[in-house]
Image (cartoon, rainbow, N blue to C red):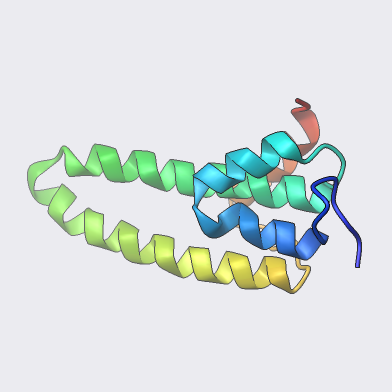
Length: 112
């Protein structure tokens, strides 16, 4: 198995990018300097769960719509969380529509 610059195997680091949603995505994006697989999963975590967090906050400000959208966004987040961790564990670069495409581009373009 390939090791990332974090010292972890790439698939394990990829899974950990999702553990605390966008928070661990940011941590691994800042730590990982060379492994494109880990950088992709970190950025996809940031874009996906960061976006869902923002949408949930905005929706919660809307009286009726927020009470309907909130639980749906929560269920979607949990489903995506499980799927993305399993795919990372399997060494698969599973690209979500829109968020994954942005993550692919930004993970390559942004160097810290």
